[in-house]
Image 1 (cartoon, one colour):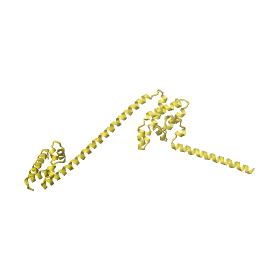
Image 2 (image 1 turned 90 degrees about the horizontal axis):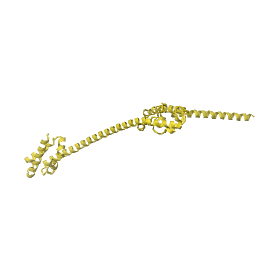
Image 3 (image 1 turned 135 degrees about the vertical axis):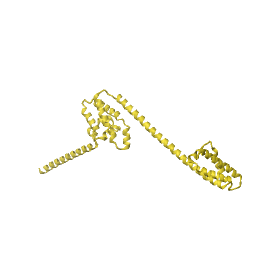
Image 4 (image 1 turned 90 degrees about the vertical axis):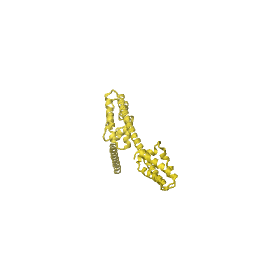
Length: 276
């Protein structure tokens, strides 16, 4: 059904309804024309009915329900009720579809905006890294080497964490700037790499890069252990949890051995005194 046919049928229905209202015949030709026109209008496509019923150019379509649904003729009244009920269903259904479409468009736009924001953020981060690399250059080959080693160790953390929340925290950290900060703290506290604290430098760098010690570099990257604190930590404190436990067991074993030795000596001395 085309738009023009729809409008013509509706006009036939309304004119016939008015004509039937002036007559007394329940089954007059006017009633039949009106009912037949409305029956055919029910076959109109949903999109066409929605368009014309809601189009402000045709306000009489929506307003004519008073004439048709409240008509004194029961046949016209019944058919009009069916027709307008069908159109109301179209209105709700099309409204939902349009709402869902708007939601889809909105969601797509939100996703696009998020992707755009991430790209912009990534670009800023890359730019910041380049600027930081330039601004944090020390001009000292030994210091640059230390920073490079620290950066390499800190970069491992992203592939070592498995918890989602932790991954997000790690992703937000700049391993390059953290490496520069830690090296600066080391240089300030320990002096140059080739100086008297070379062993301390080696100890820190070894523990930071140790494959069995992911906790240390993760804590340093996340700021849980600052560069200043790292420099003052003992070798045992920097060691992995497993090694710390092993060291603890060795100490406990040595302590037990010493206690047993002391007990043995005391017993020997006691026996000697009794014999004398």
